[in-house]
Image (cartoon, rainbow, N blue to C red; front, side, top):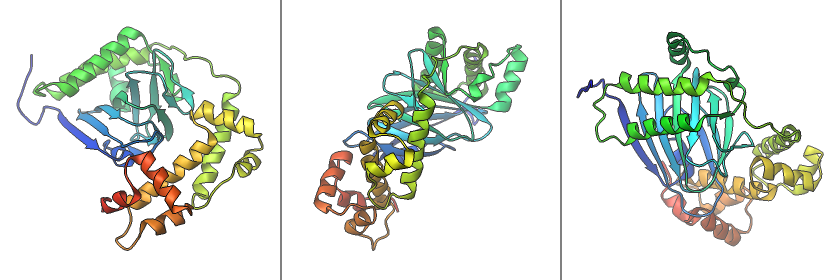
Amino acid sequence: MTTLESSFAPKRCIQEAFDADEHAQNLTRWQQEYDQLSPGSFYGRLDEVALETMQVFKEHTGQALRQDCRVWPESLWIGIPTTHQGSRINGQALGAGEVMCRPGGRDFELVTPERFDIYGLVIQLPALTAAAKRQGVSLDTHWHAMPRRQAAGDTLRAVSFLIERLLTSQTLAIASHIHQDILLMALLELLQVEQSSAELPPSYAHRKEVVDRVKRYVDEHLEGPVTMEELCQLTHVSRRTLQYSFTTILGISPLQFLRLTRLNRVRRALRAASPQQSVTEIATYWGFWHLGQFAHDYKQQFGESPSQTLSTKTL
């Protein structure tokens, strides 16, 4: 076996975070923003290894999250959760035997449950194409369009095992290109056979558009309260349809979405505040007028008071 103690060995990085959005920034070259959905203190860990044309990682998040993500351009990301229950990609629930799949340079949304672990593998597209050509493998073309992909259980277990072994090995003295070649073979097996995921119900596209329209509107009106009546008028649907749309796409109600989005925005503002800004100033700017209730809700959601967040903010 080829081993070496030099710069040719892959580089490993382990990072921990106690704030969801801080954790989102730890993944190299990704553009991400995380909103915490479940209440309690946050803990996240990221184990990452950089290979020549690959990024390999395992991510642990202790709380349920809504994640806005974009991987670096000219790449392909494969995400393999250790459990599929409770996770969604672009509003589509992940089924047994499915992996997440997204090209670089495009925004996508994940909803993940509490105590969630996922293996991630990002490959530069030229390297993937060249490897497929060398091996005589015809790659499935549907991964550009479909965020979920069926995979054989044996293949999933093999890829997960290879990533776990790479991330937890006591020594990384094996040359980077050897790790990469092994992972490439497993990745080609995952991508070469066309396997369609479960059919989406006819209502999916309409419900996704309802949720997306609300998200765009809320992004423009976060500084003040938004009512259910406004959202129904905006989307031209009934309260019941609005409710069904959110529970289908995000797994939470529209009222939960409004409340949690504003709380997460306040948390970001507190962490980025200038020395002159106060909790009261920031909370009222974001539309929280009853400060006692706000402080209670904030501590219940994040496991600390607003003043604690402000005093330990990132400069």
